[in-house]
Length: 147
Ligand SMILES: [Zn+2]
Image (cartoon, rainbow, N blue to C red; front, side, top):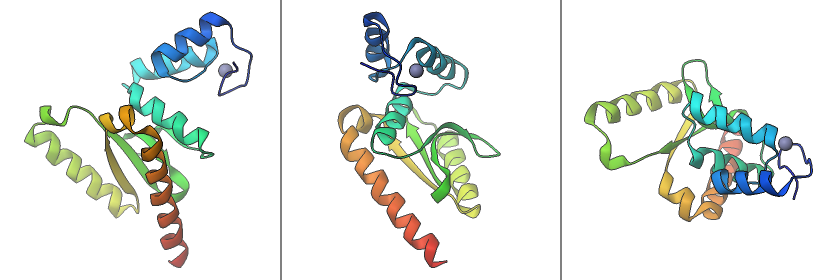
């Protein structure tokens, strides 16, 4: 049992706490850091889980990434891919949906692709979700090389 971030050996209690909350192995220092991120930036547990899922797949994602205008849940800046986790879509107002559409449009104008992933998918199909994101990334890499 070692920390996924710094590879420090974990105590039983550190392991238990981080597995219970984030479903990943983290030392006290990195657990506290995520907890702050979770509170301050409202970074969701699903975003944190997906971040580590991508990391485990060998990617180098950014968590709560500031794109210059807004905070993005997860970003792969090298291929200009933003990933936003959607929560409770049935609670969306028209206003919120419109704002998101416009945000996506602005990002697209800046050359960014925005993926919106329902949080249920991360809870139930993490592995497949990570694989799909990797495929989208590969596709983006190809098209960006062509340009
Ligand atoms: Zn650590």
